[in-house]
Figure 1: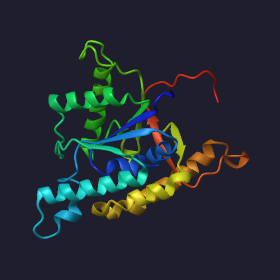
Figure 2: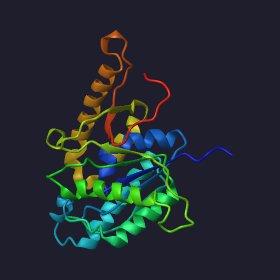
Figure 3: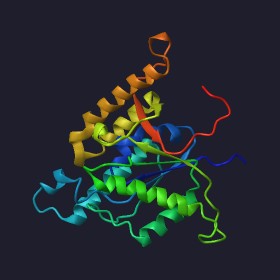
Figure 4: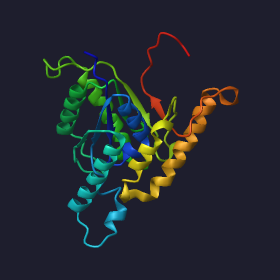
Length: 245
């Protein structure tokens, strides 16, 4: 039996995975990966201004709307396993109970690779707290003494996806992924995010700019690989290879 190919994306809010990793998700889902997306919150307080401007809005209505958007986006990307922790936002509640829950998910999924936010984001501390949280949970999931008898996690790479104000975040991409073949899926997912319509074209421009970087770094005018859309990531851990390219 072929080994399962799995991946895990941890998103602070319900839209983050779409803007920043939707192409990677769709591409790998199309290649047979079982991609699990965990949304720690719905972004109901800090990232849903459009909804809050409507008369008579309530917290539960905002959560329901953002959940529906995220589920529709996940379906557009080919994800069948999206989980909502609903731990609140601005700030996230990432205490011991949430940590235990996340470690259980990591061990259950046994991802070949993981994704989350940049290490630094002073504009939205939920984002950088999520990455610290994910690194901590990854460490715990590798510990043989944590819940003995469970399958211990190996050493999946953690890719940090692009923050919104890249130049301010100390984020340095060292991986560019061609998502041209699934751009239509990512664009469809982006348009599911009605609560943050002001970001649609911003992230289309990001994908086009990263495609330029992909072409340049794959050979440029001397034979670079064609790409219309791409995503950038920063790998946290060393890559173990048998040949340099």
